[in-house]
Length: 476
Picture 1 (tube, rainbow, N blue to C red):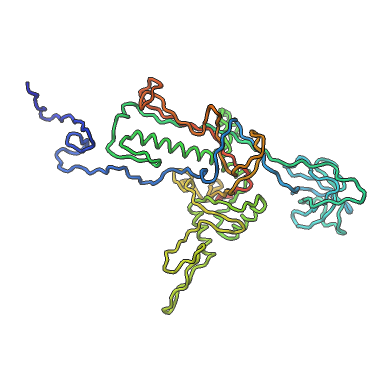
Picture 2: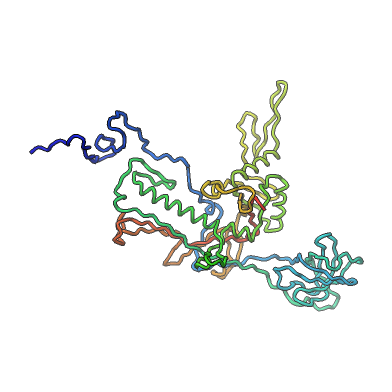
């Protein structure tokens, strides 16, 4: 019995093809069969947004170190010299009594016999004297050296120790000072993500070649989604270290009362313990003089990296270009004068002028880089950048490393100013975990007719010497 032809009006079943060829039997489309023209298709997916990832900042400026504890704890050196800025004076003839009200001072680290400079915080007048009596944790008396009493009662003063003096045959200094250390802690947070695809969809081959930023390619759409999940997780690992805040609130439905701890990210730490610029973009030389003066009072790190958004970066370029000076055009048929000399080489007038700068020196060396995270419209680049104190426009990161006492190791260690600590032991490394579950895609861990790709990391960022960092905010 012969097989009959299909009845009129019934579309024939599409036949599979053994290779990727657009045949009449396997070309699936919604075009009108009465139309003789078929649509053209591009084989490769067009990457219209370029590289969409924003991670890479921490890899540039820091390092990753293992830890086996729920808490990271370290100590940083305090100031070597002693100064108090909120002292109220009571004056009698030749003597000044000072009550120290600095909130960070539990007691006055000042001893009898030490010499002190006292300055009025408003007028700037000074007296110098020697400590003659220490009467309470925060009260001292000094006898002045000068013949004129410049400090008056109720004056609020700043004092600092500059030396000591003892009489002949007098006993030595009474008491000693313990080294000042500042203790800091941070705790790692657990980050997770997952991608799931059912077994049937894994058997579907697409017609468009797909690619991702990490090099994945092929005709399987679920591979694209899987790799994009991984890339997204990689970004979140970094942006969590930048944006994380500790759970401090006591609101009924707040994160802390729900059992979450949070962590101290870079922005939070620098905003609270570092230096903050809050007056628009510092694009004048006087602005950078102010920044350098502040850095002088901190660690005075010789080299610093600037990570800026695009407007801030252009502002610095314009400032440096204006300071460098532009060449003037010739007149009356004469040749134009030499163009601006940017960097180490003089640009000839016939050259294409490079108006961008990668670094400059003003007291210290500053190396400038555009920070993609601050420019990406799906991250901070899409937020308000003017008028708000929460509008972050850049970050200054000191280069190099510093020495701290590591409480876990029990000894001094050299650490980058900015580094990540991830949870790890000999049996479990939680720096970056990835595993597959289900019953598809090679997995055979459960009866679930799908493949689940899991991602996990447990980490926190340590911002050592936050007083050497500077956060640039647009608003005060």
